Length: 161
Image (tube, rainbow, N blue to C red; front, side, top):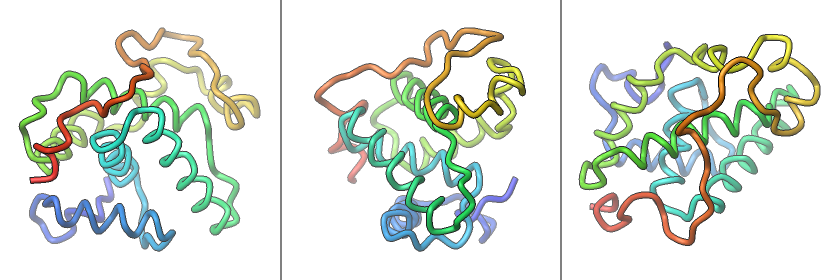
């Protein structure tokens, strides 16, 4: 797996994660693989109310896709991974530094093909799935749901340290 954050051979620290988030906001990321997608979702979900975090991630991914001109934005994949990261955070120790949470998250979801445990390739590759959320056709998303709430998922003060 390509991982821009750990190219130095050491785990990413909170400062490196913050730099990735700033580059994402500015549409200036050099490489944006699976681990970076997960890291950005973690960054926003740990700091903002869930609905706002998801909106910011979606908007940023759409901007990147538009800049690249590739049209690769995929709503169902985005929502799937946002739900997975949100569920991970709900179960995580909120006292852990963001970098530790990121390492655990990326290790847990190292294989992006886990989505195919829930979706057939036909359903996931459909035009409808690319443009809007579609329910899985193979296995329900138990414990991987986004809940609307006014506070962030983890204690913001412990993450900012």
